[in-house]
Length: 552
Image 1: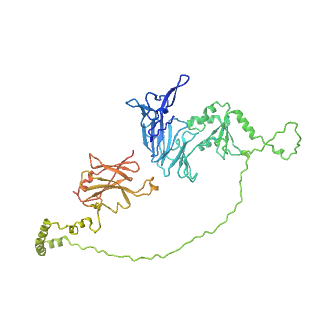
Image 2 (image 1 turned 120 degrees about the vertical axis):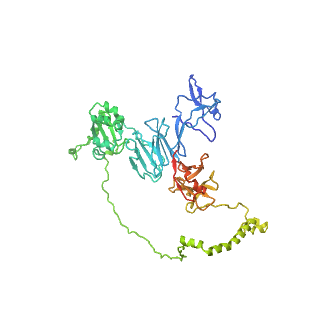
Image 3 (image 1 turned 180 degrees about the horizontal axis):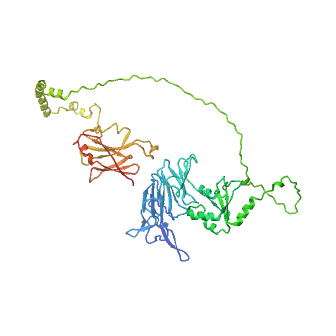
């Protein structure tokens, strides 16, 4: 795969041209003369080179692009747009790695999940992990098992995933490998082993099947195990490619003898816990080497030393790892120290508080109300106050009884507000607030209702610190509808799965509202059943509307 770097900020691109060599053949070389404005006459598009690649962005997107230049209508070459773009990861993509066994399988990690892609399947990833609690900061394929890969976390732990066993949870978890987050995982390659052996990774099931369990059937003192060739061939037929001996299948089939030697490599000299001997000569050499020890009866026998007539040969000391002595017992001591603890107590001073008592109001029955309304005293009262009420209404029609006398005193009074302070800016007309829903919230978007007069909708989000901006809150987010008739109470509540940063009314149907969440979801509401509440034709009632979400 060829990688081409595009410098988008400087509007430059790397172009390829065809140049004639000395022997008459042609070769593709960079054309730096046409770095800014490529010319179609001097450049030739690549046809026989795979120019497609996967790219991860800092916004969590996986783009599948083709950097091969294409011609426009004027005949000029330019870079094509990405073929596909998927928003799988919620933040920075830190790993994009090709499988060492398959040329069309790619592993990507970023933020809270990982994904596995297959080139040619452009509907999305073929495997996408669930959302983890800790960020995935590194990823790497295994060099010996095609279905095994490793994931590093921000808390310093490493997970081992085996796709042939389970795709929902890791097969092994190694917590707290380091105190810092893991930013890179690279398989360790051991020193080159001899040609007549091959290191193998045997799972616990394989060790149980062939009777070669580590530190039980085979140990550091007795690391050798002879395996029947027929049993290994039977394992090929039973488990096929899932067999741990599949990398050496042809060698096992061509082996001339009936038994193969398996050696337990406890010290990982050749990189794995076991290695298989491939030739009968190597098997005989290794088995004879383990029995070349001095006989017990020769211990303490007299030895006669004499000068050698041949050249003296030196034998430098060399540590044999198989015969190393391990520390089995150690003297140590423990001293108990008494635990000290400081504590204190303080009597809480009760502050004086104002107390109040509320009595239940007295209410008249319906019969008492009818008696009062039909009484002669109520009729006499209405007759006496009616002329005064008519006079007051007449005076209100003649002049404005609510005029501000202070402002009417002179021109100087026009520059101050009702409190007597200078005021030269805009005046507050309406204030919409609801202490139950708007407390400790901030407004992210405001829209007028397109058809109902005096109704406004606002989106509320929680106030968070900068270090918490990359995590999603668990509090419910709302869109509130206020009316000029009652600015202190919300008329309608729209529930949201996460914070809403923008929303709009549908131009063709104002009862349909669409909103965008912080987690990337698109939410739709239908308020057609609650239009009567907003218009004021029915008694005001707060209604909670359920949502339908659509993930990209």
